[in-house]
Length: 243
Image 1 (cartoon, helix red, strand yellow):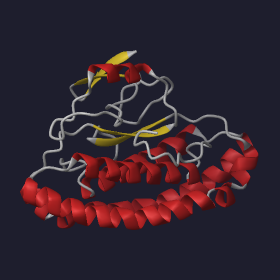
Image 2 (spheres, helix red, strand yellow):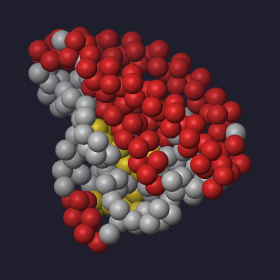
Image 3 (cartoon, one colour):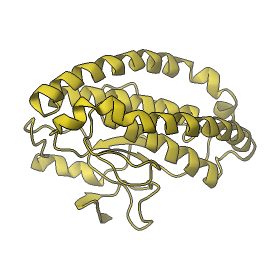
Image 4 (cartoon, one colour):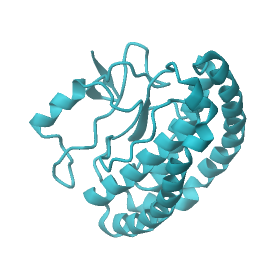
């Protein structure tokens, strides 16, 4: 199925839907494993065959920007992000409680209830928007609800049956991924500083640096999604950006 979203023609990965996207239009953005000019980042013709494939992981990141950055907003990016950081922390408290409720519900029913799944997924998507803005993966100022398309966005599959044993021991099973995510958190801080200088002086995000930052955000989102019971698929340790 093909659909038009945010002025782009994209193919919808089968079985995926994101909040804020019409039910008849699934998925958004394009995969990141493409090569092209650093400033343009256009897909080569051969890469278009990836559009129709099924998502390998239920939680995937897409970045659809052109790498250009506005120096003025780059210079004050941290200050501009403060309202988002406050709202992210407050919303996160409610989400933590929702995850606890979701754990009991999923353990009992073998599937996360639609309402809880959508609420947690919306928060994870918003968190990715904020991370994308602060890491210079995208230039526009993000919305506060995580429902609108963004240049650094997540595609999250709808609820699916989960193994009750993996749900019961999710915290233990997630320890390796959480340890990696903890280390990746420090990498993100370093990348943010390097990206700030690069964007401030050149007015553009270096292609390789953008991809490394996108990989860090993707792995973090998949880890949070696994621990938040959005999926029972383990975070992908592959260095492929859109894995």
